[in-house]
Length: 194
Length: 196
Ligand code: SF4
Image 1 (cartoon, helix red, strand yellow):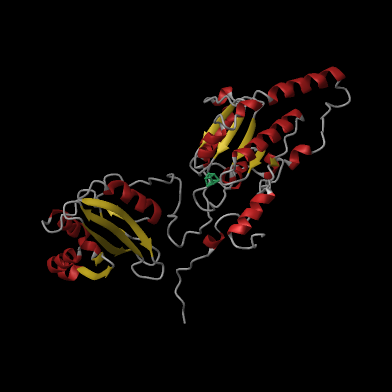
Image 2 (image 1 turned 90 degrees about the horizontal axis):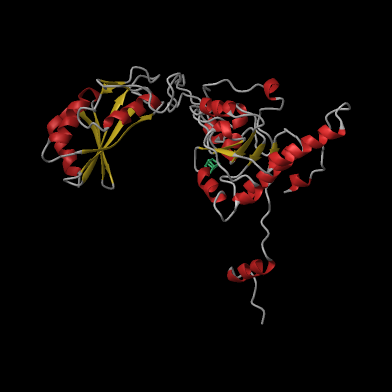
């Protein structure tokens, strides 16, 4: 979660904006970041991982983002989950346009982020070609942990009023030392100590 | 198993069966495109053939052959439990003028397969009840599974955002690279013959 430790950049509303307005904005942003109503635009295999993500095991409710709304007018976070084909592009654009401000977009998976390995007549190479995108979560499909990283990244952005696109960095898996030793033993790399 | 079906086809149609081959129990007959429907009807109706199921219908593009396209059907007989593959060659060197009879009257399941083959390769099925694109949109130009269609050419339905509109580069952001995708598919095919 390297990105999350970026220094706080509290955006001041200019010299004439008083102390009170800044604080009100902070309060609003704080409220917004914990009440994200999501609109899942699920089109492909990433949907399976999305189902895992919204299951109790990963418990998205902890971050206040678990309530799905199947009307774009009631939601403020658009999850684009899966491949967007050229035929779907106008639909996605319209869904986005129907959402009320303030609204955010999260690209779930490599296909939504960049088209992934689809590079042909069928596929839009990344949803940012048609709508603005706030957070990209690479992975094919991304692990739920990576998506939660993405969600926290988004909350961080909301708190700071920051709209520049951000990408979830890959995390290295930490393998316990004794597990490494055990697997070396199995593969016959090391002699069993007497 | 279906060697007998192949023999029966040759015996009944003679010259209209241009080629036959057999590979590990997969029997294939290349037939005259002008007698396509007649042969299909025979395969379905004949007591020894009884191919009552159309498994698949598609086409293959061979850019350096003439006729360039091959329409392929896979047949299965539920009663006799044998299979047969029929092929017919159509189209000139630009894959234009590829026409063949529809099989929808023989197997009604051919309907959508033929629409797909039309969509992807531009083969026209004469007598098809509703020959429209099935997967792509009507605005699409060309037929994408022809080797002469550039592999990475897209035809967006809505204009992409420009950089000025977006305020950020709309090209792929790191770690996504511009060459993400099927680089092997960017090979350009030329249908022009070598002069030498
Ligand atoms: S990123 Fe992978 S898992 Fe997700 S939609 Fe694309 S191909 Fe499917």
